[in-house]
Every structure is written in C-alpha cells, then in structure tokens.
Image 1 (tube, rainbow, N blue to C red):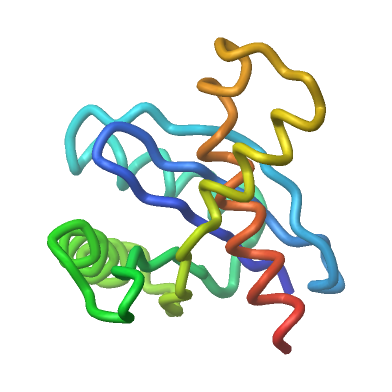
Image 2: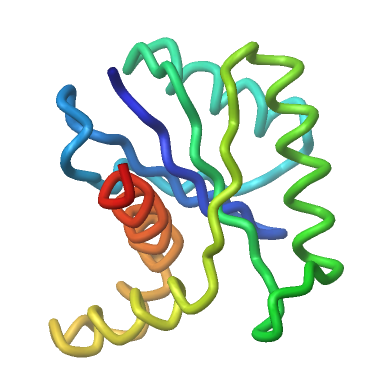
Length: 135
C-alpha cells in the first residue's frame, strides 16, 4: 500500500511517497502551485503513477494547538482534493517539520538556493515518516 505525504503551502506543495511496505518515506517532487485545477491534476497524476491508497497531509497548527488561517486553507484544499480524487486524506500535525527540514539541510551543508528548492519536499517526507512511524 502506497501512502502519499503532502506539505501544502500557498506557493508550493511538497510531495513524498512511502515504499510499498509503508515503512519509509521518500521525497519525490515539489509542485509549484498555479491554480486549483492545475494543482489537482498534478496530484491526480502522481496518485495514479504510484497507485496511492491513502494521503497524509500536514496540518499547520499554532504552537498552542489551535488551527489558524493557514491551517484552514490546507483543510479547504484537502476537502476539494478528497472529493476530486476519491482517496481518503488524513490530516497530520506538521508543527516544526519545516524547521526540522531546514536544520537537516543546514547540517548537510546545502546552499541556500538548493535548500529553497527542496525544503517542501523534505518537509513532506518528515510528515509522511511521522505518520508511518505511528502505525
């Protein structure tokens, strides 16, 4: 069973996929957002290519656990995606995943330009791996 991990932002969507056994997550791409239809089409293509059976999407929460404006945007996007694609979506607390991704890239001595290109993909990997580790 393949599970897709998403880190949905205003400008990009980081995408990760699990291995067939559901043990490890790998970042696969970053989608540069254009409009809702483009975003949905890109995700539908990926889901078909990898035979995705479940999607885990990072839910940005405030540090006190409440859901703010960005969290509401992500929830709205996921409702549309779930209706369009017919694959169940699980929301996953993504607090500090981007910070962890940035820290890992700094430790790997990646340039600022490289970090900017892959931070969302790595954050999606952290989100998905956290979910996989919990099950």
